[in-house]
Image (cartoon, rainbow, N blue to C red; front, side, top):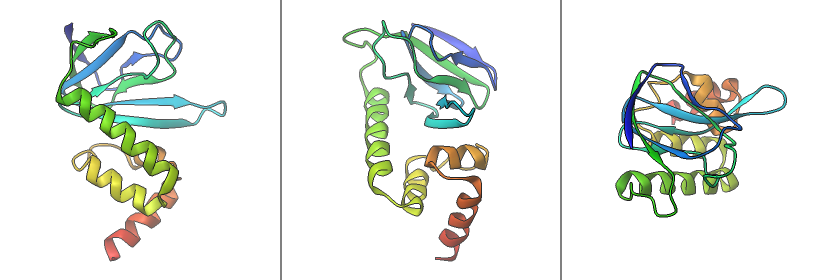
Length: 154
């Protein structure tokens, strides 16, 4: 385990690298994402203070996700192990967030996904560009603008 300062925009995990790390955010904001064959980003997860972020692959497999800093951040880096030493709230919160996200994407409308985003990440909505929120929700930025207008008017 070690603590590291990460600059805004710095990529701390590249797709294809050996996937042996879990990042606990002490301060700041990180995201994990993939890039498809057309060059489009698809945000998988945000991690703010007291949350963990990692690729779900086993430690010996190459990572499928990029992880970078949206804000200047301080992270504690753990090595993945069969029985993680970082058990506790942050780990449980990460698992719970992923579970909610998968269920949401399978069964919710775009406005329900937006409402869930606001509930899950109440302080992040003002900290990231709208295009990132749209990517996370699986919609276009234009669709997000329409949803936000409907949401405010209801």
